[in-house]
Length: 203
Image (cartoon, rainbow, N blue to C red):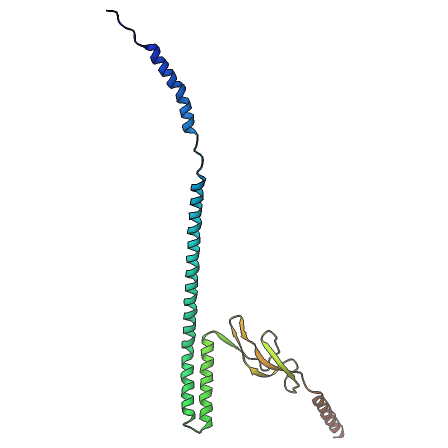
């Protein structure tokens, strides 16, 4: 029997077709796919919503903490003044029981001292202006009057005390400022000086 030759030409044609197709397939697989714009938009929107929610939660937490701090500060301040209130109530109770004005004045002085101690414990500084040079940063002048004892431009009377908390002025001191000796006082002083000088010459 005669041996049949293998179908080599057909096999070679198949391999050639495969070889021609393979490079094209590799090129198509290597090309990156186009970005999904809709997916990117959804992702960005989700990030925005998360950031917005976190910011809102942070704002609410800060407001809550600030409210708690204010409440605690108010409570601590009120507690400091409770003893002053107790002393004041005791003074009122004893005012009707004793006709002694001196005792009543002593009780009021104790309340005033307790009140001052409480303010100082809270960091409040008293602005004492009497006899001091007038300072518009700490004093509020309501009047000006002549004075032979107080130099011109100095505080001759203090109507209300001023208060400062740290570097902040809570209330200026209400004062009356001296304008120096009056014209009549100057004339009287000059006359006294002349009389004294004349007496010295006579002696």
